[in-house]
Length: 306
Image (cartoon, rainbow, N blue to C red; front, side):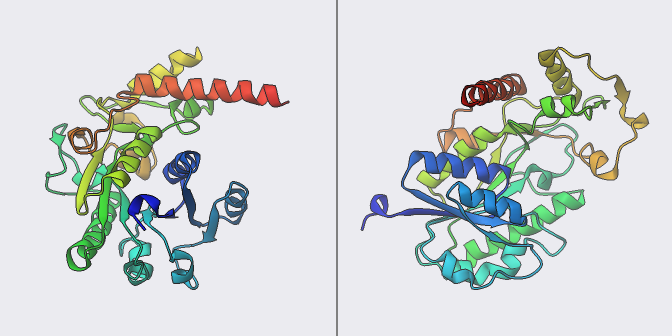
């Protein structure tokens, strides 16, 4: 049986926001079966209603009989948050994954936090990793764990270093509406971000053109200050923006403050040149507008069904 005739089967460890968008697109395209793990029993039931077989994985103990439900998997996406010892899937199920004879593609969703603070300079996939936060150090450790299997066992691994993820239900529009949006002013500081639909574009392009061992930066074209994004979301919603607060005076939780520790701009040329990806949303202006349009479209659909 040729590759094109084989049944495509995706399994996602950590069936979260990005995986959910990917699974939806693959199912819509047809000829794909999708399954994955979640830590939530209610989400497991919800996924089942949508035709996605789900398994509870709490990251503290191995799954029961994993080889049975990994049998026949052709594509594997790992989206589990790593701990101090690295990625829980690697620690508990690396050998199970290596035993899958049908596996053609493996993706690991990492983060641009592995680069650490660069004082606003540009980073490429060839930039030396120097994480300076716990979040970045954990991601770098997990990357190295999976890369070790590519080097020693020819695991068909691809690493995707994601910038800040946003999309419908997870954008500045939502934080503004919830009254949680803040405008923090740290002169010269920028964030890179990426719309979830462009993440899906990159992942599907890689699945169609595998290049084991490859690492890809996944971000849009425009790194910007976070307060710019909040101001734009407020303008779209017709609301006054919250006051601009100097970073030194801002009362933030340690996790929130840690996001301001890294300052860099992410070069995304590789996804365009090697994977042929044309970004749907090259900046936050087009991306947040798309989020608003998606909400309005959903509202019309809900009214028509009522």
